Image 1 (cartoon, rainbow, N blue to C red):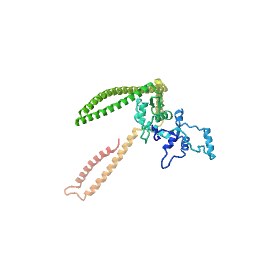
Image 2 (tube, rainbow, N blue to C red):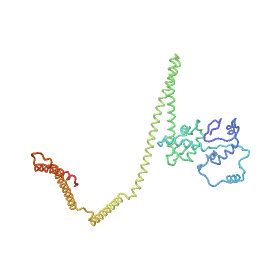
Image 3 (cartoon, helix red, strand yellow):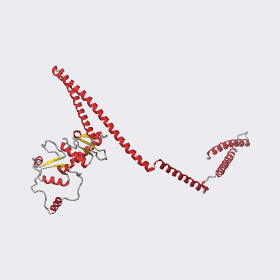
Length: 398
């Protein structure tokens, strides 16, 4: 909520009083009525919090007391009797109030942005000025940036009521997701100042690059228009800006190289800490299994128990011969199956031969005796019988 005509736009807090009532006055509806009662009701519900209480509280604003205050008890009793505790003339008291809904929305936007951009220890550290410039427009549906007063409210909320960060007068440090914020150290302050300096230098490089391009275009235009003194002046300024740009670029490169080294060192520290923690865990697990001697003892006992299981299995098998296959019985059954198949085949062949003889009795050619025809049929049947026997033998499983 920002007040019309105020020098600084405050989105997370506002000041009540006659100035607020005047700013809400319209030509169509006039001055708002019962504004004091509305603000009091919002304070009672927790939607508005007095700024002094918000900033001075040591406990989270979400810590609610179930024991009512004497004033709350008296107000409830008066309402039950039909008497309102609100001042009848609805005098709007002067005071500063924090809008909790706006604070929560801004905090949610900040945390979302940090989760997307902060992937290392150094990227979660900000100076106060870098924090303000980075998250100035974090409140949704607003065009004006957050004021310094808003930033103080937001930092108090994020450090005390969430909490997701710790901060000092000029350094802000976000905690790793799921961890408790740590105290600000001298190293954190140095990293924050270095990040701020790199950002400033980058801005200067961008500004100088744009200025050089503008001076180049201006000098070319002056030459085209035969304004030679102005063209020389622009070229002189361009040379100075180019020299400055080269110096700033070199400095920026050194700063970025230093920052990269710090990032690498910080990552190495995190890796070493993780290795230390892992070695401690491995040591605890090693002690739990009793060391190498304990493992060998367990393996030896396990091997002995497995041998006992095998021995029990052998005893059960010896006492239950039904589980043993007699190879002689298998051979006898195989020969019986083969003999039955052969007899069946011979019977079928005899039937086929008899049927052919009957068919040929009326079709014997002249000069060919029945005996010769029968002999020829018998030889043909013998050949087919041999082929069928080979096929049957191949079909019988071994």
